[in-house]
Image 1 (cartoon, rainbow, N blue to C red):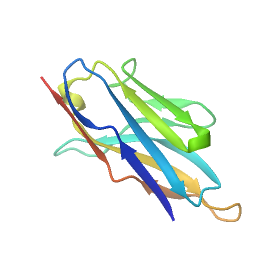
Image 2: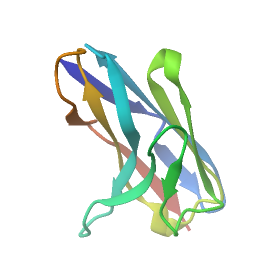
Image 3: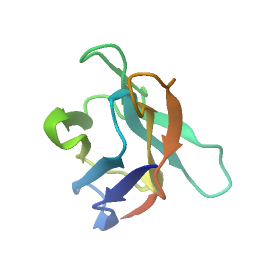
Length: 121
């Protein structure tokens, strides 16, 4: 079984920074499309940023130039550095990935449990 575990959320003032981490564990042969989504109260879950093929990335327009995704392949971990945070960034942030558990299995999609980010004005 595969688990995605997020950490690093919290309360920060507008203009501040936070760094989120997401570590994948369990039976992992390969990971694709690992990244971050968020869901604010009363709104649909939306893409923040993901790695697509290789090291290509896809950022939401609302976070470009403020958020940066990075990864440590040896640790099956992705990070989200969030700078210049705004109150509208307040949401539960979820890690997501397509994981191939073994060479002979297909990819399965997994979600983490989410971590709360609250930005005060």
